[in-house]
Amino acid sequence: MNKPSALELAAAVRAGQRSAVEVVEEHLDAIEAGDGAIHAFNLITADEARQQALSVDRMVAEGRDPGLLAGVPVALKDNLCTRGIPTTCSSRILEGWRPPYDATVVTRLRAAGAVMVGKTNMDEFAMGSSTETSATGATRNPHDVSRVPGGSSGGSAAAVAAGFVPLALGSDTGGSIRQPAALCGVVGMKPTYGTVSRYGLIAFASSLDQIGPFATTVADAALLFDVIGGHDPADSTSLMRPTPRVLSVLGDGVEGLRVGVLDEYMDGADPDVVARVRQAEAALVAAGATIEEVSVPEVRLGLSAYYLIAPGEASSNLARYDGVRYGLRVDAEDTAGMNLRTRSAGFGPEVKRRIMLGTYVLSAGYMDAYYNQALRVRTRIIEGFDRAYRRFDILLGPTTPTTAFPLGEKTGDPLTMYLSDVCTIPTNLAGHPAISVPFGDGDGGLPVGVQLLGPALSEGTLMMAAAVVEAAAPPSPPVLAPVSEPEGLR
Amino acid sequence: MASLARLELSEEELDLFTGQLAQVLDHAADVASLDLDGVAPTAHAMAVTNVLRPDEPRPCLDRDEVLAQAPSVEDYRFRVPRLLGEAP
Image 1 (cartoon, chains in turn orange, yellow):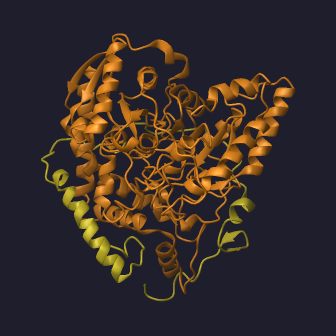
Image 2: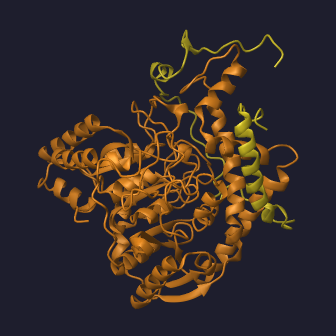
Image 3: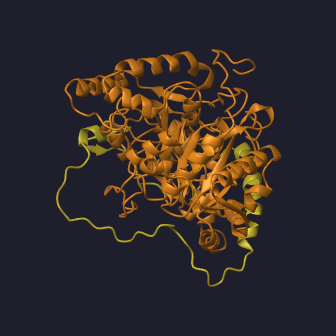
């Protein structure tokens, strides 16, 4: 991909060498030409984008600095609230809803001069690993439109991979940034819990949800993280500690860095994926890091614990969709009937499944055996990681066990779908950061993602190591030229 | 369970979900069967407690903007169908 990076675009716009309007028109043209085949976007906000670009250009003309992301087009996952602009979570129940406020990340993007071009497709309420549970239809992988982009932030990953935008935001509850980043061949980072404000992120599982960046390069992801991170009084779980600034430390290198290769993640992965992780390992050694295998057996319990905790939190969070204050209402004689009809008509099958599961694991008589037990397992997983981080600075493994799978392959079997997040979930349970870096291709020419994991607030170290891995990565497989009507697809 | 979750499911949905949820719970048996007596549960990985701010008046969301998003409104309030009257 020879498109300019976000850093290059911002530098050119700030220096007055390129106009933000010209930059945004170019990207809007690319979206218009290519998104028919990909469906990365639920909504394109061209008019608002042009207005933002105009005001950036005006600031430059007046000699004022528009900010770190001056004129850089950014796509937003459709679970981030944008004032007056529809925000749907790819669900019928929020169809047409226009939030009365902006998410904190949106406010920060605007203040940094970014130009927001639209809302990206996602699994309904971020529940899914392929973007196929979206009520607006699946997003396709730009590397092969017969395959999924991953999920739940599949639209954001695909938008960056297709070259529609240099940057996008997603949210990661169990891997929803890193997994689609890996399957689409882009960089995706899940920050430490509490470093990026969740204010205005529509809640799925509040103790796990975290907003993070998608980009084509590690440096661009670092830039976006620097803009959106930091304490926010509007989010009571926002950390009071200073958030690591990462862009400035990117070039520091990995001399003497202790890297552990996580056995449990390597064991379950396909050979073509493992081969790429081994190559990344060699690159880190060549750059001066030390490598050793490490076992954290507790992570094997992550998937089970997650599918008790996340649905429990979701069933509680999604109780607010009752047809009273916003979104869909299906009328009935009384309010209880209206609630029931609204929810039954508004939620899709995967959301209903998870609400049912969550209601069950939180119900009297089962709560201790399932939900509370899962919370104890969560403690064990954190202890396991802590043990590893006494010996290692960061851990390394695959982001996903396989490359992108065909559309429709796993939709009939939820458990198999859930297994595609087996290498990403433990990080969320521990509240830690992790980053997926594209590293060449696997069988069939599909992108492979290498995952770097670290303890809380280790973003700087992770990004440094990610930059070393990126520099050694084999060329990414090509993105297919978008065609308007993909063959074999409706 | 569906009525607790305020969902009305068709027979087909019930059949499908019952099987699929049983599968997920079977998978979770590894967690349910562990002996974790004495292990403290973790509800939040990054513990932040009792976040307070000065109790000062501040602007809130714009009332008209919020109400404009409601399915039904009367006299600046959310209007809903009958609440009481018949046994649930």
